[in-house]
Length: 506
Ligand code: NOJ
Image 1 (spheres, protein in one colour):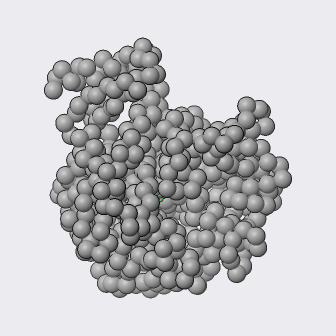
Image 2 (cartoon, protein in one colour):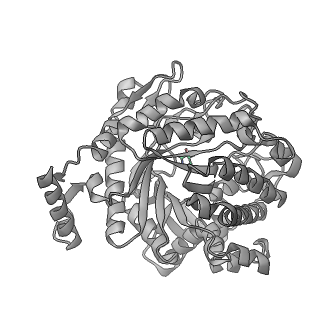
Image 3 (cartoon, protein in one colour):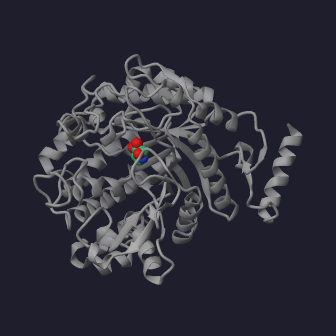
């Protein structure tokens, strides 16, 4: 063991001194990371819990959407999903056998406050998360909780029009307050939102997510305005985040000694062509993605690139909003999966998810993909993107503490996919290994990264794709709910456990 550790140190030193050539792939393991580093798996309530109308839970906007014919690729819904609501102890045992020390999950708003703040608190919902949190702690696994992972109670869509209405700030504030009060003595890591940049882009620009709002030509929507609504919804989410952090800091943080952040969808963009216009386009694509939310939350205003292009379409923060916003984060959560090329496209203003940045994004250059293709559109395997996005965040936000809150690999699956193919997920193992190596490179350059979570513990309901994509370390048989470890589960177990050093020539 001691020899292995020394060897690991030597390899790290050689890499640090750039004395190991690039043709050598170093398969790192847990011993390369600080002992305080969190290694976990990630899930979300809607995607795994099931029990969709049990114990007084109300329907969420995703419950409604998944019951509209034609919206979900395989016609499925998440009524049962992984039945985690009833099988959470078994799932925690899976985590224990992996050897993780943290678990990222989300709390269902519809379970805690089924009718929003005008209805009562649901004690059965609170009891479920208490059971979950206590069982995690019992196994030595730190709970890492998101307050919102895409879905909101449908009643809030109906009553207020969802995130387009500033009222949602108060609603979210009330929900968060209940969670801090009920769970904050044991949960020390909080995230307000998961991927709000995806929520507003796909909910209000493309319209494929609830509440299905967009302009004609953007998607299949009855109404909406793709040129303004994403910015209004984002503005309300940013202020809702600030409201919640302010109340956590003033009422709970000192006593509970926890930290609060936000998890952002963070793709890396590189110039398509070696020309200044495309370099600037890649910078715009980045700014319109994660800094859209993080700049206001950390620096008090939107990125200048956004203001310049969007003008009055971008709402303004008042003086008091700006004061409220400054430094409203203890850490940034990075959901990183892939990278894309960015091409300058002045005429793109009215199309696609990133048109407003005047950018066309693509996964191919002269017919050559940026990395290996996967089962998901626009999802390529580009390990270097992990180092790049982390370094970008480090630079832009003064090396704020970071957690990789999601990283994972999709497999396609239908009724005829052989079990062997699903279990033998060598591509996922290679993906995780190379992305972790890239993350480690960023850390060697000083990036303050404190944890890493694989998406996902178990196969689950993948939003618009239903069950046709699988991200789990464990395969789930949706008929029987049996969980079976894939190769990647054994790999993670080995990575975390018996630290072994393996250097293989490529
Ligand atoms: C992002 C989301 O947070 C998660 O819900 C989703 O399943 C994964 N990425 C994979 O697409």
